[in-house]
Length: 408
Image (cartoon, rainbow, N blue to C red):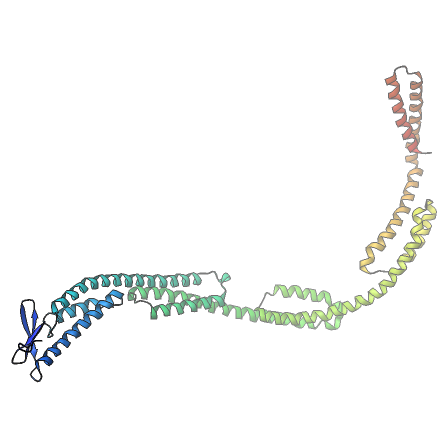
């Protein structure tokens, strides 16, 4: 600033310590600074200008980074108002140009931010709509298909997601938010009612099943003194057990353990009896194996009378021996049956040959065959045609085989 004129490139101070700022070809009074020098007066109003320039620079940076808030347009308008006739010394016209440029950018940024907010709002609404739809789907499941524990947790997770969206997400219109919340609450209440009814029914069923099965267990435990003889009655009780239905898994497992323990006592007695019987039956098996070895030669016997006599004696001894272990029954009885079948076949053959009716038929057929054979032999002796002779010889061979089959 010139010492002579107290002038500055953007303003001056007169002899009364009044400060002026130049704007184009004119100047405007911005204030007085009576208690200081001209340099101090100009410096004071330059700082005022620097403050305004700093606000503009900060706003330019925020808009450039896209971090300005929704109030950006109001901030620009406020700066424009401050720069109408600011009490400051500096290039105010240039500052106004910069703020004017920010006005356009601020509008663009506001529109962009508004679109982003609207998109975020729609996304939040879509998220809540998805939560509601899933809640309604869970509530609409057939009761027989609901997995109660997992579905209860799913509702809790949906509710937590809703709360997080409400606290941290963008603000959505109250009317839409309330309508969605009403649907979600209704779905959850419907599920909670179904769950309470289900478990109330389950408790009632458990109580009824428990009473029935406690009665069956008492009856099963009362069979213990009967030992093996109590098994048929225990099997009947098992049928009643199955018809009684099921309680909860834990309760049913406990009841079944008691019922099974009562049955185990009966079957342990049976197992002991079977073990004792098997010991006896093993000795019987050895005896029958010895009888079977003794009977084996009968398979080569051709005299039916001798075979029947020896077999009858063996059968009497066989029956006296008694039972054998079940796993050996098929083999040992099969061996004896083979011998019995052989003796039976000898008797059937004898009957076939000695039956008068069969014998008469056989002798009648024998006479017919012998007459036919004699006739064929005469034809062969007199035959002159080779083919006729060959046919007669073939027929003769066939009938001789039939005659042989008839036997003596």
